[in-house]
Every structure is written in C-alpha cells, then in structure tokens.
Amino acid sequence: MVTGGHGVRMRYDHRHDIAGSGAGVAEGTPRRLRLTRSGDTVTGHESADGTTWTEAGAVRLPGLPRTVRVGLFAASPRDPTLRRTGLGGATEQVCWTQVGGTFDRIALRGAAAGGWSDDAVGERNRTDWEKGHLVSGAVERNGAIIVTGAGDIGLKGAEDGARPVERTLGAWSWRCSSSPWSQRGSPSPGTGPDPRTTCRPPVPGSLLRRPRPAILVAVLTIAVPYAVTSVPLLPDGLAQWLLRVTPAAGFAVQQTLVEHPWAVAHYAPSTGYFPLPW
Image (tube, rainbow, N blue to C red; front, side, top):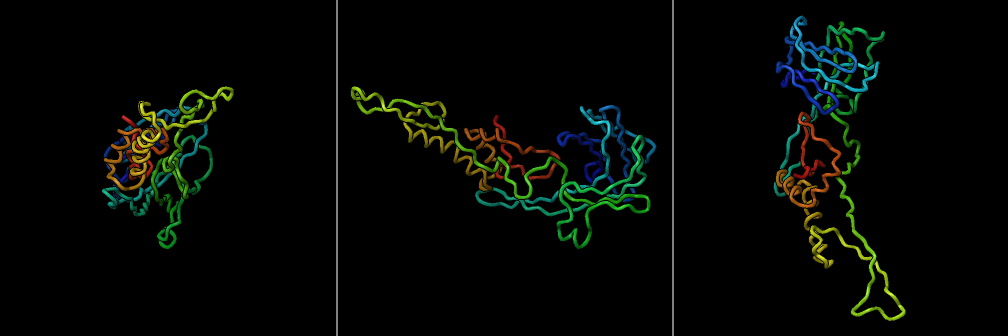
C-alpha cells in the first residue's frame, strides 16, 4: 500500500509490516505498485515512473491457494483524542475520516478472464456524511477506478456490541477439599467424622490458613487491581504497572486483543488490552 505520510508499506497476515521507501503520494506525484507471485511467495515492488522498479519486500505465505483474489482498497483510520477522567485516566473520543484514491494503468497478467466487482469489507455507508455527501465504494471512470473508503486495516475485533473476554471479570477459582469436621476433641464414639466441604481462595504462599485474612489478601491483590484498571480511572502507565506487580497479572492469559503498532487505537487495560507479566 501507499500512504500520504508513511510512504510505501507491505503488510501481510495482519501482523507483519515491511517498510518500503518513505516517499508518499500526492496529486501530481503518484506511486506505482506491483505484486508478483511465484508459488507461495509474493513480492512487492514500487516505482515513481513505471520504468525503474524497487523491491519493497517479499513474503512467503504457506498454503496459498492456486487461485486467489486481488483487488484495490482505500482505508482511513479514525482520528482519536483522549479526554482525561477520574484520577488521571483517559477515555477515547474518535473522529470519523474518509479517503479516496484513483487507480489507473491497472494491468493483470496470468489472471482469469473477468471484470472488477465492488465488495464491502466491514461496514460502510452508515454515517450521515456517506449518506448525504460521498458514499464509500468503487467507481470506474475514464479507464480508472476511484475507490473511496473508511476504517482501519487489521483483525476483526469486538463489533456491534459484542463483549470480548477481556471486558468480563473471570470467575475466581476456588480450591475445595473434603475434610473431617470436629470441635475440640475426637468425634463421639460410633458417630464417625462429619465430612464437610471447605473452600479456600488461592493465596500467594498458602501461609494464611484463616479464611478471613486469606479472603482479604485475595481481594486486595486480585479483585481490587482489576476493578480499578478495567475502567478509565487511573493513568494508563500506572494501571499497566499495577497489573504487572500483582497476581491480577494472571488476567493477561485471557488476552485476545492484539496490539498493532501501526493501528491507531487506545491501548490500555480500560479498553481490554492487558499488559503481559514481566
């Protein structure tokens, strides 16, 4: 892809990013891109004049089908701002953006016969701007294809009100054991022990044998850190530090949201991005 401020980039598997030249694109100074496939290896090239080509990167995609789809896209990430709340926490406010690109001199070699089709990836044309001013999509005009779109590129996250596991406090795992119960002395003859089930929360060191101190320590080291960091109350740095130095760091094993260095987002525990332990 080519961007206005970060030059040419080659990304694959939604997780890897290869930097090409730093030259951006603007009206009157287009960039030309080319993809070449050999087996399961795809190589990207860029050019300023269409004559001299420079390799941007090559990637191997194991299991790439013999027949694949190719296309053109336009994407524009949201413009976020952070508003301070609580004791230094932050909530994210975003401004919707849209971008358009004109693609000409499009050529395919070794492709099956057929034309281009306009497909939506994700949501589009739901905002008032798209409905009343400029719709997102693709239009062929004078031998070129004009693509207009919005949104960022990355793995699909929680959408349409879905609640990821990171936003739900997991149930505590209580350790239960069956043991005889008796008061002072031995059980009465002929009665035998009265089996009862006792449950103890997991406590670091397992040195606290009385239930009340054990529960208090578990609440202070697990529940409280999670509660104050899952909402935008504390500064992001303090929230991440607190989740690393307390047993609440175990919630990181629930991590399903992945931080992408090139994707614009508020990466904080209050938005579901748990820091991994040391």
